[in-house]
Image (spheres, rainbow, N blue to C red):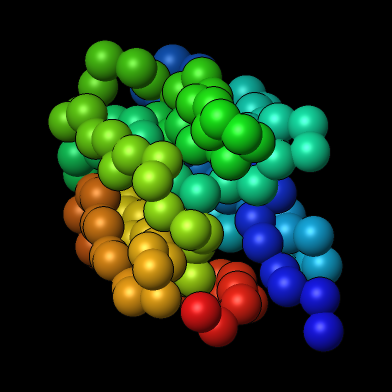
Length: 146
């Protein structure tokens, strides 16, 4: 069975507030349904022939911006999409083996909270950002058992 890994994330953010409003996850096996409100400025986090292994950005009460780390010997870091000065900065780094799950919480008009379950040497490391208020959605990424 081919292993699933995260290739890209697409979404929308409010250009005046910078708040992320919608996220859609694309793996090598599946395109997940969009989560949130898909209007505003469109963005894509992707890199040719690379997979996402970590995230960085800004979050406070909402997810204000999101960037990704890609592995492609050596790993590369994408630009941040959304507001770059609102919220508290975060940088989970790019030294993970992959992403197991992503949880996205919405309030109908914007992304309020994200949780990333990373895989590191077969163990789960969880990082959360934003205010966990609203409806939670889960995206499961199938990774190899180490």
